[in-house]
Image (tube, rainbow, N blue to C red; front, side, top):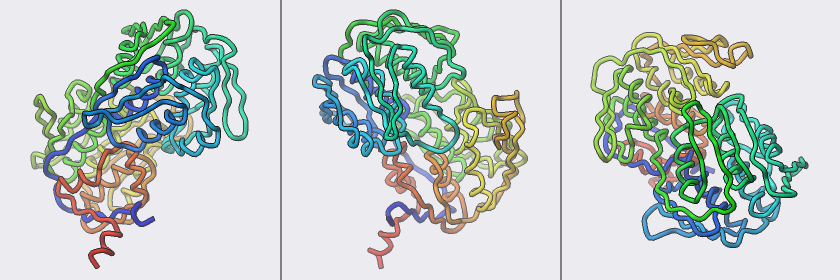
Length: 446
């Protein structure tokens, strides 16, 4: 399919304004939460990305009416007639998304049973779904694994329980929240993820009638209620997409105003951006990011769960670090395979060496497990256009940044994957002055 390939003619700074809408890591989960309500929900600031389309389709398969509202980016979700869906339809519609696992709790509450197909997602490290199923067992679900997927049954009302996560996983925290709100009794979740998108999901659930207490020590208490209503909510903006555009400005020596970006959720990123040598300016409508001239500075960086430096910020920033003077050290502690994308950058002229040791920081859970999870980036490097195959969502956007910063033309394969989390990215690139084209466009010109 030629439209899954993009020709990128690099060497020009990205300049102009783009807009980010609701967070990819919140909006699909808020859509799933609508399943729990007895009345319709209204979700605003919804981005036009593939994950939203997947969840919309899965909700409709289960009898939820989903329609657009009067406001641009508004969805109205009515779960008044939730029903079972055909197994083959679920499997076909879920595709490579991992979000169906979050349908389990709501469907068990509404129908007493659920089916989850085999799950996909970006290949950046372990995301064990078995832990999700173990959590659901603790709530009282019965689980049977079959070749085509996993069947879950709730013989009686799910019951609150005590859960301590071995790692503050975002997905596991979402699973507990979406299941515990209608479970009988109190659920105590320790070592929970507290990312801004998690807090925003808690806000959604509280609007529906849930009772959720967020402690200061990563402990969340959920008191189950008998019934939930709908919600009206404006999704928080996508801080991960905003940071990607910031890194694009830095790597291409550009100047990008990201309308919709907010300082509060990006404070850790903004500090690091400034340490590298990037400049930014915050106003009430967004954040302007630019390369102020001069040399970028090498840094030592360690990813971590919120409020640390987010793993999804790491890959775009590594591209910018190839243009910094000196040796930068990057220690990835969240996903063990997330640095695999650097091989292609080296083919473009970067100098990045991977290590199994925990470099530049405290030992992490990957240190003794033979994973290449630390990197030393030597710069500045002159990047040259190359043939690139997108490995995952953030790595894919990072390849686009590298291609835009490089001299010459790059052929980037698998760009459709970027649509999972970046709304209208082709249009935004062109608005910023990028010289990009699809092979089909070349044929038309010829």
